[in-house]
Amino acid sequence: MDEESFRIRGFRSNDLNRVKDINLECLPENYSSFFYRDLYRRFPETFLVAEADGDIQGYIMCRIERGLSKLKTLRPARQCHVVSIAVREAYRRRGIATALITRAMERGMENYNASECFLEVRMTNNAAISFYEKLGFSKAKRNFGYYMDGEDAWVMAVAIEKFK
Ligand code: ACO
Ligand code: ZN
Image 1 (cartoon, rainbow, N blue to C red):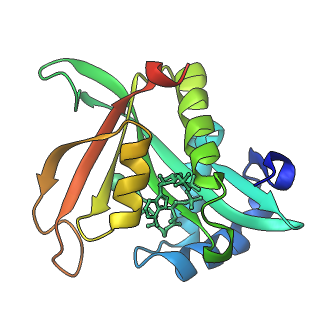
Image 2: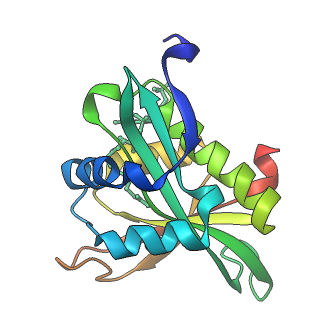
Image 3: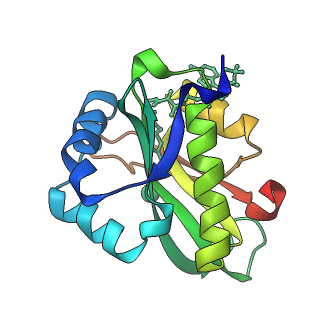
């Protein structure tokens, strides 16, 4: 696939409805407008969208958190927590999500000094687990009953220096 076929750029306030629609279409975890705006206000550098065919077709939003490393026990680390990432079905397998998460991690490192990245993913979401593993993420722990319907999550994490 031609690499020029999509473009990654920062989220802007008037992208909100489109991003909310993509989230509703792609994932069962949905959020209020306040939630999106609050993440954007606090961590604008790691809230990105992908444009193709003249419209937004995917997004990533993250929260920067301080806590114990998911990779090296007992070490505090500043972490880029991927709250949500999705690409519309017709635009998958073109590298869009790879570009979104790679750029978000670079910007999380440069702007917020994040040294690792983590996220939760449903244990049955094989596409997303394969995607994260291809990027070098590994399963750090299992969160039992993490989702509203009772499904467990894998917490997956990676060191950001890998992407420099
Ligand atoms: N099956 C197996 N491997 C996959 C799949 C799949 N369905 N999708 C991606 N991969 C792997 C492949 O190795 C792929 O490389 P290849 O195409 O050369 O084989 C590699 O990941 C890179 O894929 P991308 O093209 O960058 O990923 P894409 O843009 O298709 O988006 C995503 C992946 C975000 C998981 C997409 O499938 C999606 O939006 N799914 C629905 C929403 C979702 O599950 N989001 C993640 C939830 S967890 C969270 O948000 C924190
Ligand atoms: Zn999370």
